[in-house]
Amino acid sequence: MIGSSFVARRSSLVVRRSLKNKKTLHLVVTISILLAIAVANSEAGTEGAIDPKVEKAFLEGNYDKVVSDTTRLINARSSDSDELYYLRGLANLKLKRFDEARRDFNAILSGYPRSSRRFDAFMGIGDSYFLEGNIDDAIKSYEGMLSAFRGNSNIKLVYQRLDSCRSKPARFSVQVGSFRSKDNAEKLASKLSRDGYESFVDYTAAAADGMYRVKIGNFNSKYEAENMASGLRSRGHSTKICSGDASH
Image (tube, rainbow, N blue to C red; front, side):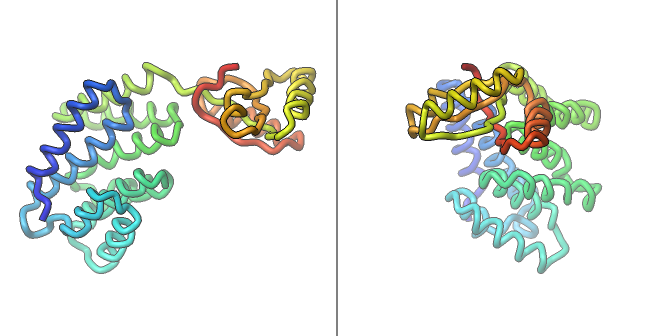
């Protein structure tokens, strides 16, 4: 079995590298995942510990297998299922299945009121929003933890998450077209500008794949971008929310 000391050593190494390379919250989430497995095994002992095969699959990055195995175990047993929901939620985070991850974490909150994983489940929900690019809902989730878990020894992790959310806000835009022809992209962008939209052609992306994407806006939150996209769809435009540097 891969024990807690192994995971702790690996987590320590990742922490040192993150300090050296100044990684973002995405790496912090990975560290938390590894430490969570170690703590689960050390606290649970032999009985009720996470199945070593499932743990090994997680550490090897075989997240689909983790989801499959934890689902089978959840359906087959009633004891310590909160740990299984938690591990499946973490695997879904790594697979970028954010809705599924939130369902797993919420299953702990609604079904296991005395679970030792409640703090971690709340954190997982916030992390799912952060990794999805939904900074507004991530902040709401983390801020909710400040009052719900006042005095918790791990509350400093929540403050670290909030600092990461606020230090470099994500930018969002709405894509309304994608063309191989630069002229066609510029014509659509010009038309949208005449209609009063802050439109532009993403030439940076075009340099990578030859597709000229027409986008609107440079929003601070996904919520603002979604409101814009809704209005554009009502006018017959197809839309896609884009995150990252939306400057032009």
